[in-house]
Length: 173
Image (cartoon, rainbow, N blue to C red; front, side):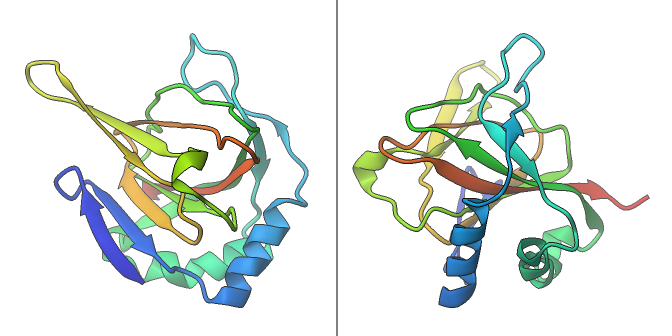
C-alpha cells in the first residue's frame, strides 16, 4: 500500500489497498447490498444518501480486518461501526463531524475520472476562522483515514452511484 498525507498529516491516504480480485469482490458486493435512507449529517440537515450496515461476519468486513489491524494509529481502537454509503449521481452530503476517534473511508467504485467528481471534501478552520479546504478524490481501491472531529462531506459522482465503506473507530474501554 502506498501512503500519502494531507492537512499536516491529519489525513492519511493509502492507495492500492486490496489485491485485484479482492477489490473486484468488494466493488461488486456493495452494489448488491440492501440500502435504507441515509442519516442526517447534522441535526438541522435532511438525511442524505443511502446506507447499508455491515456485519462483522460479512466477507467485506473480513477483508478489511487485517488491514485495520496493520495501521499503527488504530492499535488502541476498535471498530464501533462499519457500513456502506451510497450516493446517487450528483447527490452531495452536508459538512459534518463523525464524533468518533478515527474514521476510515474506502472508495469502492471501479472507475474514476478527474471530471467525474465524487471527492470527499475536508475543512479545517484556523485561529482566524478562515477555512482551509481540500478534496480527496475517490480513486478506486483507496483508503482514507482522518480524525472523526475533522469536518468533511461527500460529493456525488457525475454519472454513476458512489459507494464508500466507512469504519468508525473508538477508543478501547
